[in-house]
Length: 259
Image 1 (cartoon, helix red, strand yellow):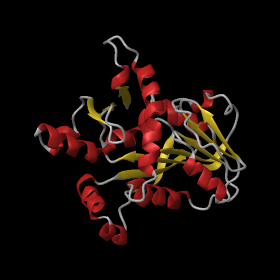
Image 2 (spheres, rainbow, N blue to C red):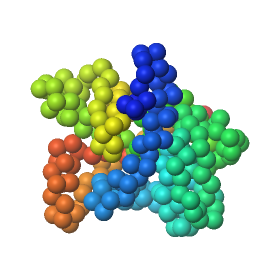
Image 3 (cartoon, rainbow, N blue to C red):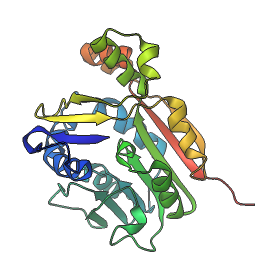
């Protein structure tokens, strides 16, 4: 994904990587405000499901790649996790951190090159809606795999690609199938800040799954979480959105055994 800040656009020769980094720093606070709302799908669906798949984190070391402001990994520390590290490009971090948590500014595309992570290993490594920002997805996953302890695993969350296909079909007057299998990047306004545009590289479920094998990982569990019946009744607008756009995919990934 590329993020473009309309206030920073200059000419066609701009560096999209620099635009992406600068715009994400501007967008990060808006994202955190949206995520923290009582009826956000992150609070109602995503984080509860991610937390269940992580299981008991007591004494476990955790690395959150693309941690945002660090709120989620801070919660894991308060739940008893061991030494934990969050990495995010924005640097828009919590100001008060629980003991045992370190937040680093860096690019998740190659975690082994982030200062402060060299030679370290972790029991759990998280890509929570951040994997789409990796410049080379296979390389990023290989690097993360190399940082896992012997019984460690990666928890990776991505938006269901049907969501983007459905939105484009509505906008373009095309079919769901046409948009789902499209290879053309597309740009849309961020719902968190309408001055910032996001450019997506379309992907299918098979595109996503086929990255794991070359990275030396296998899928132990896959989950497509939904609203609970109670929350669906309480927030019918959110249920209607989930019915139409499906939500997210969560993968629990482990290294392929050697030999």
